[in-house]
Image (cartoon, rainbow, N blue to C red; front, side, top):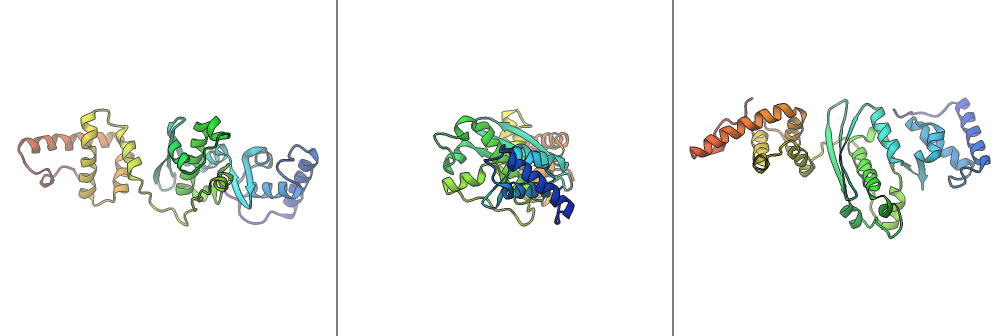
Length: 263
């Protein structure tokens, strides 16, 4: 949970002591001088991150903007009781699903190596060449956090995102002012496909989604969200609709005129 408000005088004295000792130790030369170390710890305080964790790579400040490590960002979201599930993570693609614990709102994001190449992020030397799987995970995590958990990460970006954007002229994604309903249809349908191994079922899945959508007068996102919310019920409704569709086709009756989805 993010901490708001100014620290007390006693807290400030503690942070000043921390900053001075850290600077005098020469262990944090790359972090900055005493004042810079102090600002990192104060920024970490707002996220509920300990000073040592922040100074040891958990949090950076680049030109006044906060960067969080992927591990810290994931930890903050999980600490807030929200859910994160890695659906796919390879050297070429990362897909992560997140779900809020308060509203059950769900969103899926993807970041691919092609997207990184298009943004000019991949250089001859650097993390994208050495550990592409980790870099893709970090970018996907950052995108998911901004779109679904902006109240958790505040104005924080993922580690390396700000410096990468400067080097590649990439435009950083803005933080949404409110949590708007996501509409990434292709990714949500891709998640639905994971529950249907039969090729014939996959071919008619899109038709089924449209039927449910029209029946309940839901938006596309609402439809996918409801179907993914109960996979067992999803399978039951799909096969019921499939059987009625088969009968209707055999009788050459227009499928749209039959009650294919139970209320």
